[in-house]
Amino acid sequence: MNADTPIPFRRLLAVEARKLVDTRSGKIIAVVMVALVVASVVARGAVVGPKLQTLVGTAGIALGTLLPVLGILTVTGEWAHRTALTTFVLEPRRHRVLAAKCLPPLLAAVALSLFAIVVAVPATAVVSEVRNMAANWEVQPLGLLGWTGGNVLVAAAGLALGALLLNAPAAIVINFSTPVLWAVVGRLGSAGAALAEWLDLNTTATPLMRGDMTWSEGARLAASVVFWIVIPMAAGLVRVLREEVT
Image 1 (cartoon, rainbow, N blue to C red):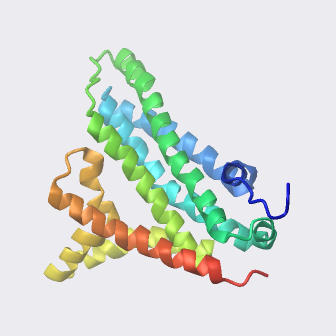
Image 2 (cartoon, helix red, strand yellow):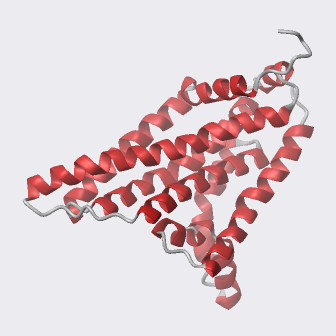
């Protein structure tokens, strides 16, 4: 290939997608997420019975916890291992590299959501047979679609935080401490409750994941997405473009 010929984006995307499972941390997180999805669905079925929609939603606990970590490690990995220099020498247009890094975790969020649904179907049937109970197969398509969208949003929030900080430990600590901080803020009077109502992504995404979002709830979700994803990612892009690589 000519030195002036740009690397096809599909090749960058394939390389970055492979890095999700090539690294030790990526393999561990992938295995743990799959195992937790299966375990949570089975355990929930044993407790609440054969209710398909409930079992699918239970898998969101594991995905909502680990998908942001996957996003953080995807963006920060090369900076931590000092391989970013090699990557940017091969492809000096850093925005293309960052775009290629962001897409695989988002696609992984969709794939894992579909996997949870696939696991929940036979789990519902097995629980129904074992407990001799009628299975509840009712699902809300908009709810499942919104639930999948919520998983994509938490992965995107992890990507944005990782791009902003370029430091995995700091980003992971902030990610896990944020729900606690918002719980505190929400109890600081009416002003704190209003802030949490508009800017806490976990709160604003709940109607989306239920599939019954109203226009006002959509406005709150949009505000939190701008606050937690759009602004940090834009600032992170500027930092990635300007950061000195050693």
